[in-house]
Image 1: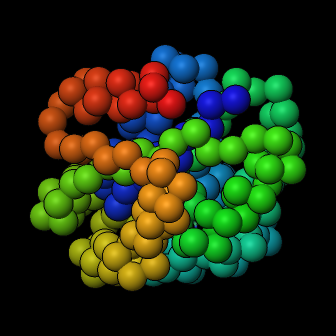
Image 2: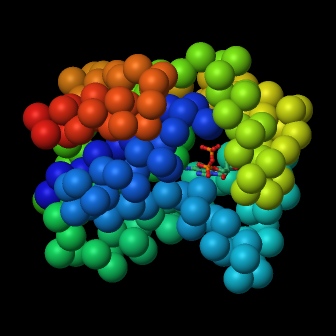
Length: 190
Ligand code: ADP
């Protein structure tokens, strides 16, 4: 399997690039944000509990997202590989993912970190908020919280994969195609 972690702050373009990666490499896209929004839409208990945290820009508990990812890995045993988008967001999630994959004699092939500066992220998220209706993209305070959470809790995940020699960084500025070209080159080597 080819298992890729697509990493970066909110608004870096992970979802957009995931769509292109899935087509080019035939991988299964697992976005914890999408999975959580689908639970909210279906008004499940899990969705109800996650909603207030997400609307405030906070992380939902590790065990919740790890459980969702476990179910998806179990359900797709014959996949060519996975692209993990928005997960792992804490070192605990990264460790749990390694353990889950090990149980299937698999591992992360590479972690691709998309680098975009804050001012650009804020502008992109506000623009997305106008189009998508996502509550967490429409409020500058919530966007600020998410960027703080990224810096305080998530950015260290880079070190987790650096220790395994798996972290690769790409410049996330440029057209969608330009950024995809950079990512494609890295995944081809992974
Ligand atoms: P973005 O990357 O633009 O912030 P996501 O769709 O990845 O958007 O995530 C939206 C929200 O869902 C996050 O702010 C957080 O509340 C929750 N979430 C998503 N993935 C995780 C995760 N791996 N761990 C904890 N919370 C998560």
